[in-house]
Image 1 (cartoon, rainbow, N blue to C red):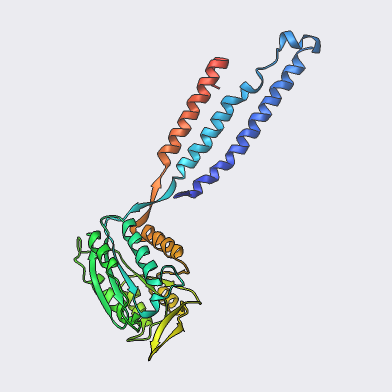
Image 2 (cartoon, rainbow, N blue to C red; image 1 turned 135 degrees about the vertical axis):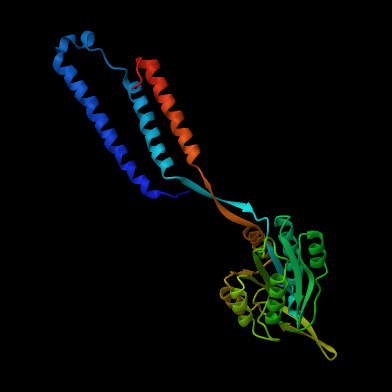
Length: 319
């Protein structure tokens, strides 16, 4: 919780002063009664006061005052609400190394499952597209609100040979997002979610493309999937050789940083699902301030009524 006018909270310092004044008044009344009545007559002339009950209305009034001061400071809480207009392009690496099984059942299969969960988790109005890339990028589905088409594109992802053309992929994704139909003269807030297991080794630099994404106000969220122990079988003549394909997250992290996005790592299928679920919430929702002033003021009024009611019931006076 936060306050839009926090300076008002300085007035809360008056509450301890009010309590100190009340305590001093109670002691003064007790001393005055003791000085006025002889000890032997105290019980009949100055009977015992109603104990804790006499403090309850004052406690209620003090709490009400504190809550009213807090209300005047305009308390707010941040909550996430679904975005009614957003465009997201998913880009999946389908190069040979994505067939490594260090992430069960394979890097590519785990990425497909997580992407499918992502689409299911974003608001229905969000436009979601799907790309695959190895030596070159292929747009399987342009950003659309028909998520069944995007799910079909995800299901169609398949290994696409050697090479990782990350820079060209980002450029193609930016083109898809920046050429979307405008709504009320504005392009919907957009983002790219790119998952891969290594560095770019084909085509233009992905770092230059990331800088262009920054200029276009389209952050790139990268996910490096795999572990250092990944291997794939490669045929060399008549033999099949087990070839190491360790994950390489460094360039992906640079791409995310340069574009204004964020880099994630996924060393297991569960990690991939967690990352995509987080991104579905982050990219499919926006944070808004919800003001709580009226609720605070209502609570303070209720306390004032309770304090006044108890005072009338017990002592026949408001305070």
